[in-house]
Picture 1 (cartoon, rainbow, N blue to C red):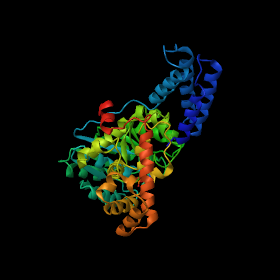
Picture 2 (cartoon, rainbow, N blue to C red):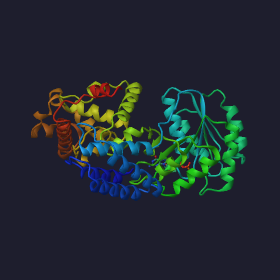
Picture 3 (cartoon, rainbow, N blue to C red):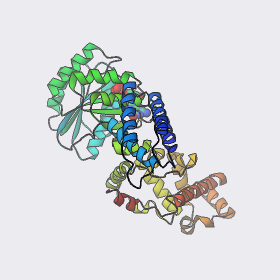
Picture 4 (tube, helix red, strand yellow):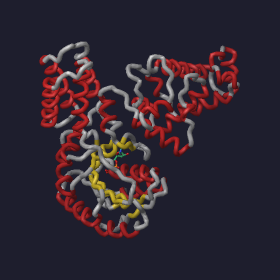
Length: 437
Ligand code: GDP
């Protein structure tokens, strides 16, 4: 999401490099670039105006901090203002609570309800879901399937037309559960009966949180949706879904601004694990091309907890084929490789596209080929000459080209890691310590 905004912002700020004083013309040019980029990303025009005015004012009026270049000074202001546009940091306590999910049909509400169950379950909470979406045929079965997979109890009744009855029965059926997530009915458009229904459900549930689920691809209409739901039940958090699927996403940001609440989670894919806690600082850092480590650290910790993974061994200075395999395995557990790598502060280290292109099928093939290698080859792949390659191909039932591809991939990763931070050694452990992980 916001890919083009990210590129435009980086380009706009780059123009300030090397300047010794803040000059009005340069700032005005930056503001124009910024406005264009934000509007193209579907951010509400009024919001763009407010934002750009405050950036302009601060950039021109605030004194240049000692030792700071113009570019960093302005970048800092843009960063701070964008972070505040994202709304306040949201709270999510791990305690007994009820969460009401609101949003239009197709926004990803049901999927997100399942993801949320999974997220909280992983945090050690006893979770349950109520599906009172009897408007969309199949919503109950969809949520039931998701919940079954992760062993989470769900209450629903496809034969009961009255959502309020379902909710009441559900609350009593799930009274032993710590966190209850209530998936409500959506509609194709904002209709009065939808709003009435959700208000009644809200009264009956008295939820701790009322979260609005918004599709990142939604344009300017997102703001109206947010307004209606907010007026009806008081939205206190927004979940933006389908962040993986759009380059825009500004509409969702306008929705956030409309509710005055923050973004709680972002959905970044179709599987049940594709839900990330939203961190405004990290998000904007990434948008502006600064590496964000906190989100990665959080995920890395989860992987360690759940699988007892040796993260220390993940990325070492001495990088063998074994290390590469372990690292790929670990990274894959954290999420799509591209996503995970985008969170690392790789700066201008442009990784070749193929680096990201490791599917689980490929991983399996790598594993089989590596099983046909000797310990010496695994520890030092530089010994792999033609005859060894032929032997490995034969032994693993692969083609010579496939073995060469594995070696090529290894070399690419090795080179990439060497290039990391001016040739320094990269330690995941050190990185985590540095960021308080
Ligand atoms: P609901 O009508 O609001 O309950 O929407 P659903 O949960 O059924 O989701 C609608 C579609 O969006 C489904 O095909 C989901 O798989 C898809 N979806 C939901 N969240 C995400 C996401 O974060 N990323 C992607 N790519 N697809 C999503």
